Length: 369
Image (cartoon, rainbow, N blue to C red; front, side, top):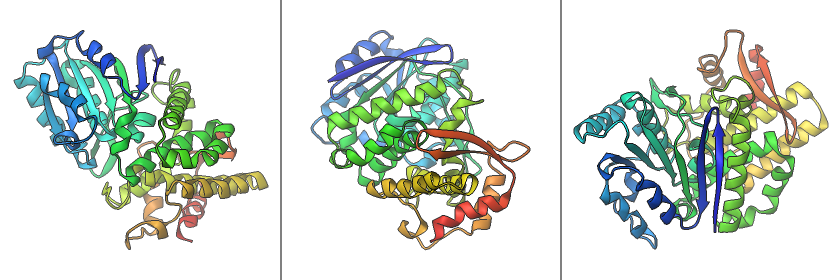
């Protein structure tokens, strides 16, 4: 069961391979590079992994590599400098290859390194989480966190290929698994009403991690994201639709200081989606928008995703004023205000410039009930 197709982002084209066992395809690709010029940046989770497919990871030992912690703290300038030092010490050539093996943190860090080392070196992604497969490995965004802000430093840089092995998903714990599903739910709300309602229908299949349905939603998510990014590689217009819930969610992440034990990225986006749905009701004031708000909460809850602060395992509840202040300081804000994505109904998204802080207070307020 292997699905291969071509991604187009800006002027770049590259293959994406999705399947249950794609080691042969990966091996064939790696052989196109000199062995001594391949450098693997790997999540330390896989260093001593003992599971049914761990033997597939033996290829790591054939190349120069480093294991890094997969936590958000690794997306830092210090991690960046450490890896650069190793690339120089190991004499990785400009015509070499960096391999990102891990979740979104590993992928973002490795991609930023690849985009800047010797002004650009080839990169491939081997995403191992639902978040990385559905979202972060696709579209060319890279990033480091700095000054407690998410992706304050970053670039746009596309890989030469992406290899998505669905078996990796079986290693994920419940929170990390559902956090990735949230990214797909987000895109269904803004882009595909049929898929939005399908998520209700196949919830048990996805909860059980059935490969057939995992491949379906990952393929659908990648194709949907590519539709948004293919002609807007640097996020000037239509790609902004992918930010539904993200501006609210990143305000929460900034408050919690990137501590993912309290709030996973996908959980922050789930709360952000809830606030964005509420903002939509405040702007459109229609029955169908209110119905979308209620359906959104129902769907997120079906996948064990939070829709208010009461469902978080913390007593540290942020004051609304702090969250609104974080919005004002958001790196995507333009001089006249914040650009938000709002939806009148599933599949009907629009970009709205919000200058009225009172609307932001009211939107966040739904998370406290």
